[in-house]
Each structure stands twice: as C-alpha cells, then as structure tokens.
Length: 137
Image 1 (spheres, rainbow, N blue to C red):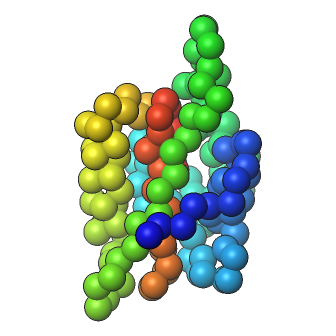
Image 2 (image 1 turned 45 degrees about the vertical axis):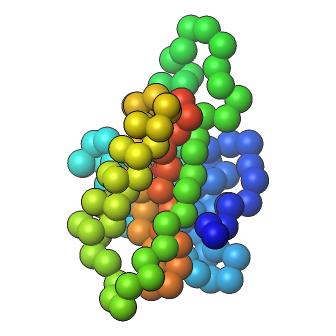
C-alpha cells in the first residue's frame, strides 16, 4: 500500500518533503526526471537557477490564473515503488510517470497543465503527482 506523504497546505511544503531526506533518510537522490518543460532546472541539481519555492510557483500558476473559484487541493501526489531486481533509470522512471499521469487523466481527472516527477532511490517510493486540477508532482 502506498504511503501518503505528510499533510501540508502548500505545494512548497510537499516539495520540501519530497526533495528532503524523507522520514527515514529514504530520499537519497531526489531530482526531477520529467516535467512539462524539458529544460526546467532541477532545484536539487541547480539551486541557483531554480528553488523549491520557484518550482512551487510554476506548478501553482495554472490554479492562480483561474478567474473563478480555485480548488482547495490542486496537487495529487502518489508514490510508486519498483519491486524489481534493479534500479530503474531516469528514462524508465519518466515512462512510469507518464503512465501515471495518463491513468489519472483518463480516470475522470482533468488533463494536467503542469507535471513534474522525481525518482526514488532503490527501495524507496518515487514521487509522482497527477492533479485533480492542475499540478502533478
């Protein structure tokens, strides 16, 4: 059963958890593997170009641009675990993230405007996020 990330009311709080050490130091190499923009800098690998706050602002932008009521919870986070006998490459995790976003979008969820995914270290759950409204982390 996937574990739910600690609660938080802000996208940046979720990113701080995902890019931090985790609850038991299970997040050993957090970094972006795929996003809506292939040139999006990774806060973990290039913090001078992109901060977690900056990434959160980009992920939240479609919701902030809404003219009507905004959803209270606009980011959906899901953990996926590789139970195989090897560590997946970033390209393989990218395919997993794309499949998760597609599955979320085809199960009566709106198509995500912004998506980003990070891999997990061996044995840890990689975070993905397809949204019930606009952002996927």
